[in-house]
Image (cartoon, rainbow, N blue to C red; front, side, top):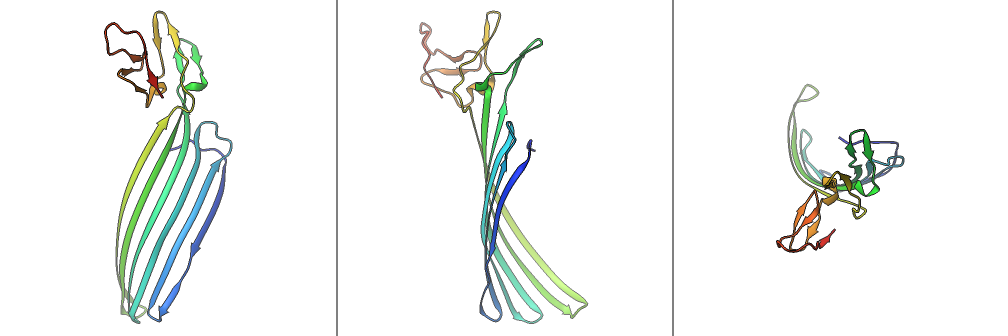
Length: 193
């Protein structure tokens, strides 16, 4: 589920068909789509998708046909969200509490089918098979290096998302203080975003 706004879509689809012999058809396919969510400050920002594949059909007899095909689809989605801290009735809205995610999905599909006419114009026999495998990856980060902290008495706390992906050299990441020292007498912090 995504939050979506007005969308501007650019799309191109291509299909070619070759018939090297009368009973064999080879059809390469391809497509590209780009969706831009123009008025979306938060939520889904854009989706880019492209597809390539091939479909092969063979009819050795007038009443019998076989088909087989393969399709690869790549989809990249970008979204922006924000974490807002609240203390009592006060809401803290810091620009560096904004975080972005890039979702990448790769889908591969193979399919095959058989169609036979058992009784012309009355009874057909059809068998179809399809297998798909998908791989998804989500990368989340802060576009702006976090610098803001909200003071609540003696306790300083940061948005948990502020330290998403933080790497601390020789230290342990901590949502409350950013980085905690691994040595008992050290007060220095070395954090890399």
